[in-house]
Amino acid sequence: MWFAIVCLALVLWVNQRTFTAVANVVVAGVVWYLIKGAGLLRHPFDPIGTSDSSFYQILYLALVAVILAMAVLLARQLEASQANR
Image (tube, rainbow, N blue to C red):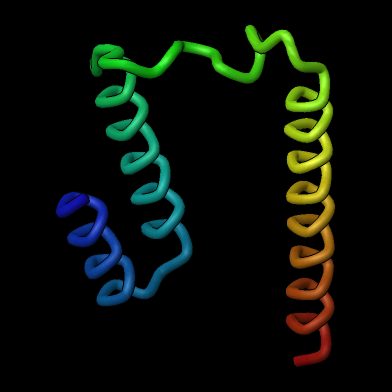
């Protein structure tokens, strides 16, 4: 968490798109590495995929679809606002 906060502070200080992209990739890589090395304590590895309930699986897919649609709409809105400047 502190690493991500420091990277965010650096991104805000440098204020350059390329540096921001590289910092995001580095933070994502560090998070992936830490999660990959973490052991399972009490939670199943894939609770939705291994669930017997199809409702949870459908609900998860619907949630992912809604979030992806919102991301596309946000990207379009940001692109349109950049084009108007």
